[in-house]
Every structure is written in C-alpha cells, then in structure tokens.
Length: 69
Image (tube, rainbow, N blue to C red; front, side):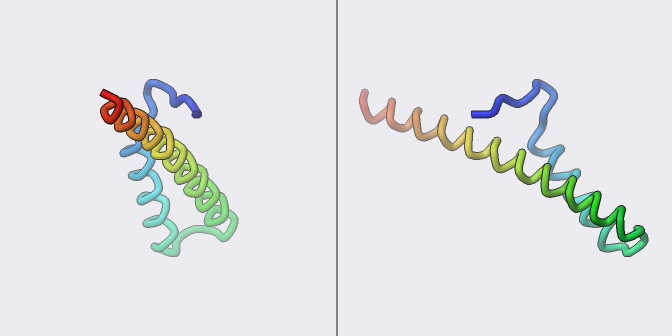
C-alpha cells in the first residue's frame, strides 16, 4: 500500500481535478496545456484511487477482526 504524505488530502486532489476540468471546459487553453492539465488530472485520480483502495483494505481488515471476536 502506498503511503501518502502527511499533507496529502483526498478532498484537495478532487478539488484540483474539478478545477482542471473547469479550465479545460472553458476552452481558453492552448492544446498543449490541455494535454498537460489532463495528464495532471489523471495523475491525481490515480492517487485518489490508490488512497481509496488502501482504505478499503483497512476497512476489510477491521471487519474481519470484528468477525473473529
């Protein structure tokens, strides 16, 4: 499981993705900047997915622990 920096925030990453999408939708960016921002959004989404998968594993482990008690 990937460890996240202490300042890492799921909510902040989601907000960043939303901001990137909004800037792309406005249509004011050069094509290269659209690709660069899209790549950044994909990177953020991958981080979020990793975070959620890690938390799901923790929840599963806790549930199994409760079942064993």
